[in-house]
Amino acid sequence: MKIAIIGCAGRMGRTLVQEVHAHKETKLMAGVEQQGSVYMGKDIGILAGIGELGIAVTDDTEAAIKGSDAIIDFTQPDVTMRCAELAVTRGTAHVIGTTGLSEEQMQQLRTFAKKIPIVYAPNMSIGVNVLLSLVEKLAAALDDTYDIEIVEMHHRNKVDAPSGTALALGNVAAAGRKVKLEKVVRRTRDGYTGIRPPGEIGFATLRGGDVVGEHTVIFAGNGERIELTHKAASRVIFARGALRAALWTKGRKPGFYTMQDVLEI
Ligand code: NAD
Image 1 (cartoon, rainbow, N blue to C red):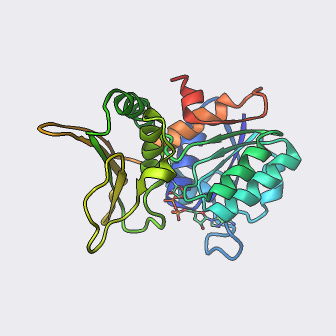
Image 2: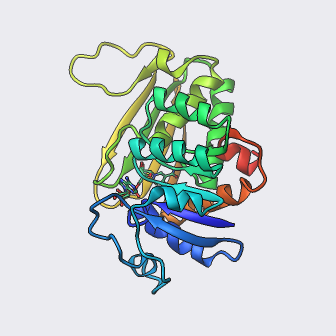
């Protein structure tokens, strides 16, 4: 399977280059970076620390998409939307790890997914996707005398908050309670907040150092508390999940898929 990496010089991009190159069923075709990047023309293998691959970083997204069966894209929302539009014109599958997309952008992606397979997951790790199912089940089993709080910590360079994974955990918790997250969400607290309303789903965001990603979902009841925690020790878990998703799109009908579909959870 021919694969191009969008954002190949980024933290995730470099890890993806390593993983796609190492996999025997995939062939790395191109690595795309933004126009004017200091990495333009550099070898993507050297950037990824695995030696020369003979593939230079390009800004020609269209050519990269045209020459590939699937693109893997961990960039930023505007870039992802443009890639999806181009992927539709070429019939190329699109695996999206980018977080911070707006509701409107998500809707647009669902429209694009009528033409191509799109796998979107704010967290591609197997552990987090199993956690998502567990959280939904727990939220369904416990009533709203158990307050749900979601705490996340990421490295200092992360630009969106709460993390896409934290929001995904909030969404499944809300789904377990048969409510919409938008109706019960409390993304931040500051100053005189008043008491906590029942049913609220709260978020707390920590940023610092080089933390790859940590999420804890707390169900705080009277006299007891359940906490489910996932800690990512390396970006490799996301890259492997994305690669698995890309392979899974082979021969797949157009549609908007998640890692739950890929992993058949
Ligand atoms: P990063 O900033 O290190 O990498 C992003 C890369 O995209 C940069 O190299 C940047 O130059 C490049 N880019 C920007 N504009 C571009 C364009 N027009 N064309 C091609 N490349 C372009 O960030 P990161 O830590 O690698 O994270 C990237 C995204 O992936 C973020 O949204 C992050 O939250 C998300 N992420 C998702 C998962 C997951 O499992 N879904 C895991 C980790 C990170």
